[in-house]
Image 1 (cartoon, rainbow, N blue to C red):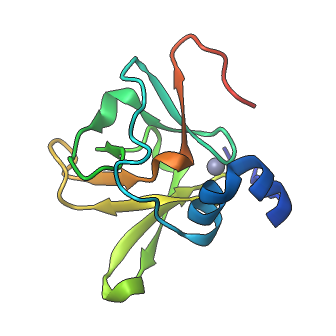
Image 2: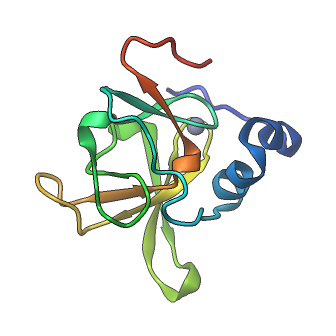
Length: 136
Ligand SMILES: [Zn+2]
C-alpha cells in the first residue's frame, strides 16, 4: 500500500472516464442515486483509480443519501483524510492513499460502533465479489 500510483491527466481520463475523472481528480461529486446499485454479495469495494481495497461489503449500510455509505474503511492505512472548507462548510475529505483519488467525505453521524459515515461517490468504487479475480 505504500507504492504510490501516479498517472498523467490523459491516463486518468482514459481509465476513469469523464465523470470518474471529475470526481476523483477534480474533487467533484456525482449526483445522488446515480451510482449506488452495487451487488450486495460479500466482497470488497476497490478504488476505481488504482484497485486498492478500500471498503468491505460488511461495513456498507443504507444511509438513504443516495451514495454508497460505510461505517469504516477496510484498513485505516488505505484511506487518507484532509480538511475541505469549500462551499462554506468544514468537511473531512477522504481519498485513496495509494493514488490520491478523491472518494468522498466522512461525517460524524453514522451508526454504531464507529459513529462514522463514509459517504463515497460510487463512480470512485469498483465492487469485486469474494472469489472473483481482482482488477490490476
Ligand atoms: Zn486509488
